[in-house]
Image (cartoon, rainbow, N blue to C red; front, side):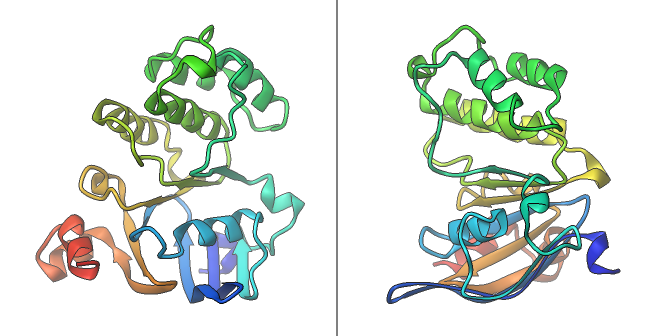
Length: 235
């Protein structure tokens, strides 16, 4: 399989912040049409990795190929990135947030956005400032899933939210996943409630890949769940 047939190819990716080496030579290959879990505790390098792939942080070394191309303005347009840190305008209504986002992306699907709004139990007339953290997270997920982006990057979408919102987000990802047209990479340390999503997983430990592979093969070969493997790798 050539790199053009993969959604993402990363080789020996490295990034240092002052005295902290955040990424220490990470390599991985994500085929098209899969949902991957990027698993690890806080500080393991997950967010830095996603920001490098999204083109928001410049790596110090290594290679990234997105859909067979080196990072550029063109590849940025192929990525839907939901960072852990919120960037919503609190004075906007939910509907205004959708309209504002739609203006930036040619692949925006207005009908999908409205369907997701209903599915996520959000009112388009509500102001962002009135939403709970879980509701704001659902809204941010809509901004990614309402696009036809070939590569979707979600950074800790389950962090600090209520079980109801977590369930809705998991269902929303499954519902809108576009099969062979799309690849989704989800950074999380909330593995127990989300491992059902993952076709494959990568465990990051202190900026290095500690374990990676097919989720089903790892369960079979190790005789335990991905959540139990997480507890073993990160005791």
